[in-house]
Image (cartoon, rainbow, N blue to C red; front, side, top):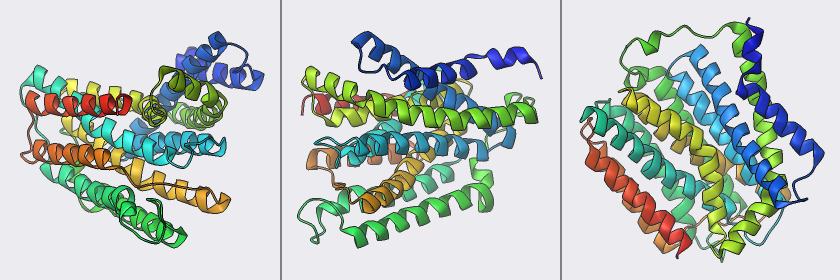
Length: 356
């Protein structure tokens, strides 16, 4: 083991972030709060880096699953920590964050991958069955958890009562669990990238893998606690900007998804679009299929309100995004037009969040 490797940024920044949090200086000045935001992002990047090391050790498609679950743990931790901190919009924060994550993944990450790969290679090919399997599970969970609450009558607000929340949380876990079984066992070949030189790169040693696993756990904890400490500053910035508080959910989702988005785009630039697709759709499924049940458990245990139903504008944008992605992936090959349309969808979503 080369000791010099332990001075890599992915080991240093989590320790600095932990020291910053333990010092408790987040509210002392705007400059220190900005430093905290930089350390928060660095901790997120470090977490995903260590998840990638562990993922490389276990191989595909387990690697993309580990990345997706790591991202989901970050997302759940941020949501729960901000909900427990209270606030007038705590009940809608999980909905806003999950919806933002879905929109950023489908339109932003997938659109950027389609555009980057299309510009460089004109067309890229992938297993159409893998995209169809992920999308059918995603559509089912999205409709049941984000749209159906608007039309149930047990609660006055667009939300579920406890029995409904438990049922649809279990339903989400069943769908996601079945998808994982299909991805890793029954139809694993649909999700495997084509062989090339990068696929056979030397895996990390056992010591490096164990160290990365340890730092991954440290990073996840640091991100959650640091985000909770910085949440008043984040909400204050959004309020001063004059934007709706739903923008907080977009910020959380963007911070969490940034490193995975970069990894997916990097894969597309290497002509590994199957890996990009696995990362994007796998993260979308994990984001909603695991986040909603986890948040549901917390809300039931602590008797917290939870509003899940989307408004009409959001449902239209969601339907547009899902339909566009389905059309983009139904032929098993890509081009730049699909990427441009999806990115325009993303900009329309962000614009209507800021200017509702």
